[in-house]
Image (tube, rainbow, N blue to C red; front, side, top):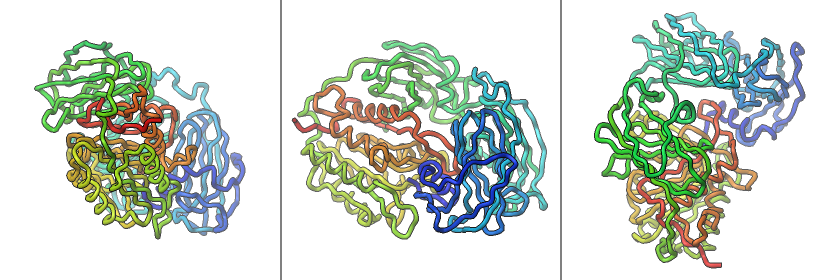
Length: 630
């Protein structure tokens, strides 16, 4: 639900609305297809872009090259297919506005080839040519996961006048990379003459890097796991248009990994309830892409079981990560504002092997630490311990005037939550619901201030939002290590995560819920869940979009699960009181049942949507809502 550029909007439409585009038939190698984009054709709901779609059948490992030419419009190609295949191309690099795209099938299946224009409203005649440029190998995928390491290579190059040039003015050099599925590759480029920018494209992958933030330089460093066999391309360019100069490019096996990959793969030390584990982070340990060392522990958990994990150290700033069997992840930095040790308290949503990551808040920290694990059943909480009333500000925006970015069902999300809380008899009359045109920046601030002032210490304050979210460039900081602020979009402008944090300073309630169903919403966690008593539930991680939950007739999956959870679905022990632990576990469990919800980054990289649940200093057994007696 983010506001994108025209190109990014077209890519997002391939995730959420591909079944609604006009079909144009199958493609055969060597047989050009002539067609025309017409204004009367079906458009994507999200991008409102004229597009034709063709079917392409392929086998695992087969490689195809698509060439789109037109004298009438600026050609744009993108492909969505099996095995999370997701690629796009604007210009073929020849200086023309034609488009060329080479794809390798990561698995057998049918891909959709979208023919559209860079300017979403342009129309006219075109020719599309398909060529088979690689046959499926006898073994197209490395099923064992033991892909051979990438051969280290070093290159010296120079960006200069006469090089290929991007449409936005940057010079660019390209290097081929023959990859094998499962390989982990680390690519870095350095220069003391210009601000480097690095990209990797190929079958099922598009990754970008501007600055090597882990080492605090303007050089670029990118670590990726290759999803399929095939030909990849490394793009070396500059951050600003027209920059020139010499550079050094290094390609080799990855020496670092993401947190989820580090926890999911490799050995982990067995851990049991009541056990204390002494460890030490040191050079030579597994290193995350962001520069932190990490140790991995594992334990067997049962759905509904309450666990408390503590990591304590006087030598480093502890940081804990818990990875569920489904891949859902929960993080914690500090126990509280006054205690930098880390603690995760949660009710497990699944049965199976869990992984604990013991790491640090800052890159490169080393030293001894202690991790403890406690397990037990969740405590019983009586109804008279629960919050007396719910003071809520609920916002749902479907109609964004003057744009082509309207959203289905998001306004209904706020209405349904208001109805659900009203049925429980706990919704305070001072609560406010803002729908569409009511949801201005000033209107939100005024409603927030009034409702927060009315809520007492024993009440629950709740802020809910369903609508567009965005990421905007900011300064790199402790709360924004990626150099981006996250926003929610009102009808007349943005509310940033920093502004939301300031607004929550007005809340006097002992417990407050921040619930955001919008793209990139997980980025609000570091900013707002920073004071005692605030719990956050966010629909996606901070660099990923959130999908429409059409199957539930809801604007978003989180919105639907919050509404059903607070209507009684989250009351796991059936004591008529929903606790913070129960609500968080319910949301994770329901997302896990959906398995693969498509998501993407601003740059069009594909992934899956997982919720972010951050209780901060709110205890597992803290009551959130007392259910009405039936």
